[in-house]
Image (cartoon, rainbow, N blue to C red; front, side, top):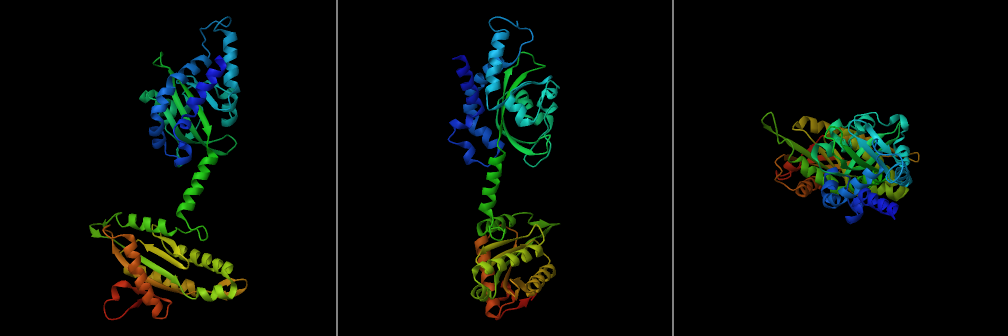
Length: 383
C-alpha cells in the first residue's frame, strides 16, 4: 500500500499536465506558458513530492536497521529504482544524491557523476532552446532555491556524452530546506525530444509551402505586416519596403506539354532562383499556383531595379526538365511602401497585383511600378 501511494504521488508530480487538459499537446514549448498553466496544480503536488523525496533520500544520521532504517530505505530505493520516470534528488552542495536507473540511462550518467557538488549545474550541462548554455542560476534546482517556488514544465536542451542532443522537460520542488546552506531539491525529468521535433514540423508546415519550401501566403502576409512597423526610420530618414507581385508567364504551356508533375518541378526551380536573389531580411513567399511575393528591405531604387533585372535575367535561363529547356518569364508588379504600419498587407499585395497585371498586358517578362499606373501609361523598369 505504501509503495502504491509513493508511486502515485510521484506520477502526479512528474505529470502535472495530465490534469490540465492535455497541455503538452496544445502548446509550443514555452517555459513561461507551461509554468503559468500548471502552477496551481503544482502547488498541490509540492507537499507530495517533498514527502516522496524525503522518503527516498538517504539520511546519513539515520539507523541502518529497524523501522525507518536500512530495511525501509531498501524498500524505498526499490520503488524509485522501479519508476520509468527519470528522478534525481539534488543537494545544492553535493550535487545529485539520488538518481534512479531511468535517470542514469536517460542522461548517460554513472556513479562517478554523483555527489560532484554544485547542484545540477555541477553535473549536467543544460542549454536553452537556442542551444546557449544555461547560467548556473537558471537551472531548475537553483530557480527553486532562488524563488522559493516549484518549477514546472521547464524545457532545456542537453547533449549526451554520446553526442546526441535531447530536449528535456523538468519539474523541480524544494523537499528539505532545513539547512539553508544546503537545501535539497527533487527533480523529475522527461525526454520530449520527439515531441519537440513534432512541434517544429507542425510549425514549419503551418508557415511554409511544402512544395517549394517558401513561406506560404498566410505567413508571407503576416511577415510583411510585421515588417511595415520595424525600424521605420534610418538615421532620421523614413524607410520603405519594395513589394513585388511575381506571376510566371507560360506556365500553362509547361503543364500542357509535360504535365503538372513536371510543372511542379519547374515551380521549384523558379522558387530557388527567386529565393537566391532577395537579400535578407527580405523574403520570398508563394501566394499560390504560379504567383509569388518578394519583399525587399531597401530605400534604394537603384538596388531594387538591379534586383528586378536580376530576376528577369535569371528566369531567362532555361529550366531543364527531362532534357528539355523551358524559359519561364515573369510579369512583376512593384509597390513602394513607407514603413508606417498604417496599411494592411493585403491592400499592398492588391496594388502590386494590379501593377503585375499591367506588366502581363504589356507582353510579360517585365516589371511595372504601381506608381506609374495613374499617369496615362505604364513604365517598365528593370526588365
